Image 1 (cartoon, helix red, strand yellow):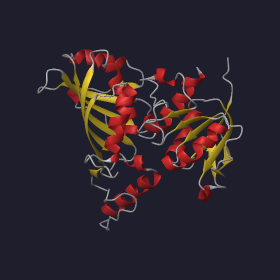
Image 2: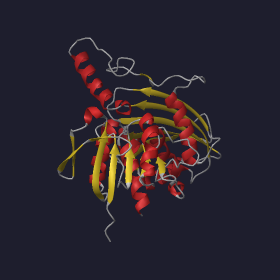
Image 3: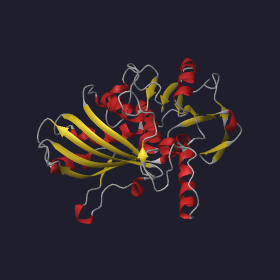
Image 4: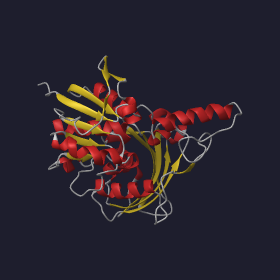
Amino acid sequence: MAMMKKNVAIVGATGAVGQELLAVLERLEYPVGTLRPLASPRSAGSTVRFAGRDVTVEVAGPESFAGIDVAFFSAGATRSRELVPHAREAGALVIDNSSAFRMTPDVPLVVPEVNPEALRGHQGVIANPNCVAAILTVALAPLRQLGAIRRLVIATYQSASGAGARAMEDLEVQTRAALAGEPVVAKVLRHPYAFNLFSHDSAVEDNLYNGEENKVVAETRKILGQPDLGISITCVRVPVLRAHTEVVNVEFDRAVDVEAARDVLAAAPGLALVDDPAENHFPMPNETSGTDAVRVGRVRRDPSCDHALNLLICGDQLLKGAALNAVQIAQALQD
């Protein structure tokens, strides 16, 4: 039986995530009826490509949501706070990719492979998690079959796509300049990016952790339903275009067998086990970019702690870290 078509709006349709949303909706054959791409005034009148045709971009405003069934938001927290109430008033279901509502108690924060039950009883707004938290929890969730997770120590290696299309373009420009022996000028992020890495550029907060790190801690706890989970994290920008890598130490409440961990990871939805010590082949951004599955490998015991394992995780920031997860939420609500 064919699914009923949905009229879909995308706020931020011309941005990196918006463009990926269009591609994912088409590739996964989400039943789009009318498509309404929305963006800022400077993008109005341009077109986006969807299902073999050009669709004109309109200015996102309070009146943009009449007749819309599902509205995907990916234009930042300020625009979400401004326009989501209007989308809800018009009767649209909102799936929001910004940080605006993630920690609002009655707004589900959902990774479909991890906590689909959170969708029950939603009030019309569903939050799409921070990219690091989404990729991380896909890999953590199946490990809970082996024991309760008590503590995480995380280091991230985050790609330019997390800062948007302009950051990706600037990384390419800086890299060409560096290779040509020309001055490297940072235009989007705070520091030179080509052949460099630096602490995540979000503001350092009172606890001396930056905004990205504090988001990941809070959101991971909410997604996993563990408000007291111990988490220590350091987030770093690296000169990679679109896949985030995470090194994670997972401490359990009991000893966990490495082979058992590999088995549950290999069988889990949304994951691909890439774990070949003989070939020194583990998850890498160049193999993960453009793919749906989160890759996990380098599964090994922590010799300093009897109850801990080390993992290497990699996921496409624009896909499972953003657009793919949002469309999967919409699909879950269709079932």
